[in-house]
Length: 162
Image (cartoon, rainbow, N blue to C red; front, side, top):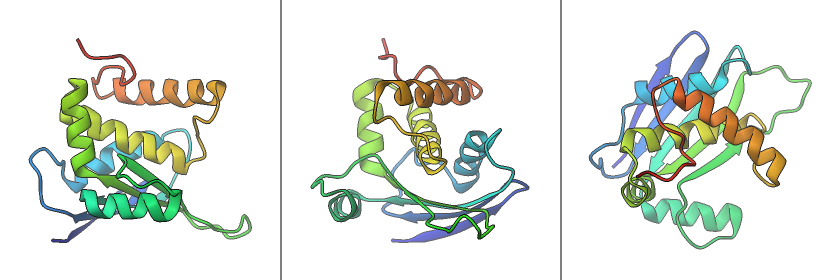
């Protein structure tokens, strides 16, 4: 199963691909675009990106191929590899594994929508160059995530649910 949608907004061109069985709770393309746009505020005036929502098999294969890890992970970020002198709004691609996100939300006691939003924001921030390799970089990235997600009324994603 593969379904594609395109969302065009003032600051964002989003190619959205649903490449898995439509599990309950997977948001629509417009919602993904809203979350991605929020992560772009103050970072870029325009961006083009793709978000592909996949099943566990594809998520595992991509994580193995690109990261050498033989399991499906929640989100993979692939920044666009464009020379600095080329001015294009292309940001990159996100691959989000629906079964992993769904299971994590359930296991962590989070609202599925909040966890989907977190995965999109987290992935877009990676595309923008944020990372969590060391503690200081992680603190910067996580604080940005908290601020963006709180704007949607979502709780701190790094605080365990009660």
